[in-house]
Structure formats: C-alpha cells, structure tokens
Image (tube, rainbow, N blue to C red; front, side):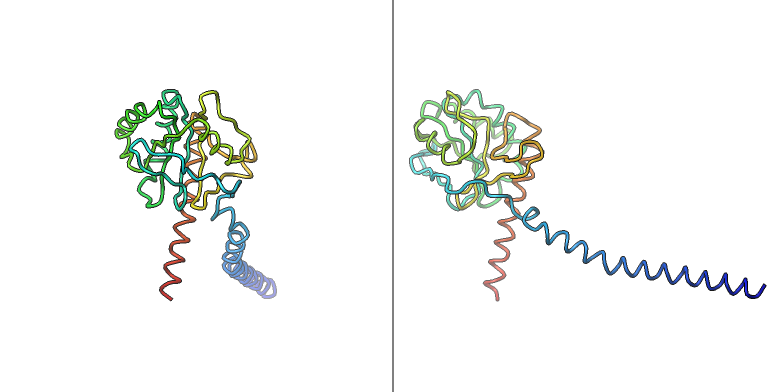
Length: 231
C-alpha cells in the first residue's frame, strides 16, 4: 500500500515538474520565435516593393491655379483623368473617401491628377465638390498636353494603357524618389502596379493598406534621422 502511495506521489510530482518545464520552455522560446518571424519578414512588414524607377518629373505641368507641381520629395497618389474628367468623378470620390481623407494631413503627402487644359473649369468644380468630403488643399489638378500625360504614364513602366481620352482607372503610389510602389505578390494578380479606382473594394482593402505601409516607412525613416542627429 505504501509503495502504491509513493508511486502516486512520485507520478504527481513528475507531472508538476513536467508542466513547469513546458511552461518555462514556452516562455523562453515564444519571444525568440516571434522575433525571428518578424525579422525574417522585415521587408514585407516595413516596406512596399518598388516596381519601377524614375517616374518622369512634372516639369511641363502647372496646377489649375498656375503653380508648379513636383513629384520629388513627396509621397504622391498619381491619377490620370485626361480630357474626360466627368467620367472619372466617381473614381475621385472613392479616392477622397478612402485614401485622401485619412492621409492628407501627412506633411509630405499629395494627390496629383493629370488633365488636359480643356478640363480646367471642370477640375475647379470638382475641387469644390471635394470640399464636402475633406479640404482638398493637397489635391492638385495638373494641366498638361495629352502628349505630356502619355509621356509621364509610360515612365511608370506598367502593362496598362491610357484610353482614348488619355485617362485611366488605375491610380499609382509614387514615393519621394519618384519610384513606383506596389505589390509583387498580390494574391489575385501577382504584380499589382496600380489600383483600380473604380473598384471601391480594391481601394478600401488593398490601396488603403499599402498607403499606410509607405507612410509608416517614411515616419520610421524620419524618426531614425532625428535620433541619429541627437547622438
């Protein structure tokens, strides 16, 4: 009887010791595993892939107010509305609600929509309508020739084409170095160079996430720069 009791006590103590070892192992290994997971996926979590380099500067364009407009040193959402702005109003409202409204106060963030000169009055009207959504102070409608619009579009180096009105439903994320950002492993299309602004779900789900990644990347870079200067 005593040996049976001793055996039960030993088994109980062994079980308790085993549980302690398992708990300690989990507490030790879990942080390491989490660190290795995020470290191995650093590029995916921190940076949005660069898909093409050297998008043309907008030297030949002026805003509808007559001011210069630049891509350099700005994070830009670039759209091509060409000579049919009326047909792209729904796209503009989608972007205003889901992208511009959430991010326009970021210091170096801008929207640029390329249009032909005959669309300037319509652009003024659209800008007034956008005020009902948010202050469009960082949304510029840039006027240029159809040839200049096509030239800029071609430097994006995408498989897309402008339509007969020198416009496109696709909208693009351009970084401060004038490089095109997008996805190289999208679950639906693989290489995702631009986002279809006529597709509300794509803007809301994909583009919104990717804009956050790019802005976070530059916020981190700015914090590191400030930290380095303080050392």
